[in-house]
Image 1 (cartoon, rainbow, N blue to C red):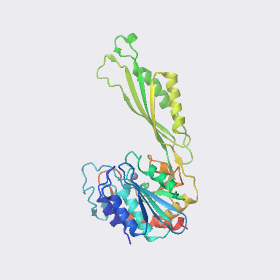
Image 2: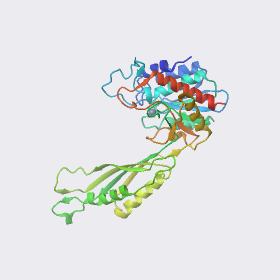
Image 3: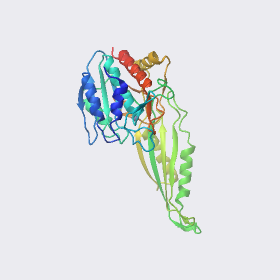
Length: 365
Ligand SMILES: [Zn+2]
């Protein structure tokens, strides 16, 4: 039998800061092979990934997770890679995001039969180029796309089981470079002020109400994140100004529709401006159905209350999985993720394993 806290402790002792693996996946693979999983290692570029599958009764449930972690930074009260427990709390980088979720799922799979698999990547906190995206392509070719996928990100807000994510907003980054003509502030007729050209553009972008939100989504939001001229003096009219913005958008928009809108605003105000856009993820929503229903029932059966279904927060690897099958995200309380002294109470970890076990029971029939 596998205990989630013991497995988590072993995982926390592997310093797997992206792109390093630190031995984390070998720890998992040993545990999974011991449970009868067939493991395929999938190294892409410098990134370690693997797919593990155990055939069994019922529909195919996949658990997706990442073993890589963000750098620990300074000021920890326990070693970030020591895997120490104090007063029933396990400390370490990745305890909640998301080695804890993985350990809980493996412990659950050890207890309950069913057709389950794990998609494990080492590239979630980094560029996410050689991780989940590539493994999914491999799974497609090998005809191993599951009926439902649960991503074990720490989605719970205040207590375990209060929030399930059934989609995510999209994210778009844009850089506007506004040209002008440099000159002396006392002779503006000989210059063209790049800031003066940029201000009305930004005003129009900021004033536009993108939408009022939709059934499962908050309203979309545009934030100007930087306006730079680099002017160190007061008597020079700037010859160039650069603005950066980020749009978090719901299912009423797409990266393409928002890019077209920003282009249109620029074309009307300043056709000579240049625009660079990067869409880091489109929005997605898993429609309510039997898949998320099984997850919600599993949570209720352990916690006694119904989770809220929402789509808040940043992007995650679920955006890639959504192109292939229904996907939802559910895991530990995320308050300490990416922070100093990241930690998980052992009791919460055990309860998460109970919920995942209930999910396998519910779904793999
Ligand atoms: Zn994560």
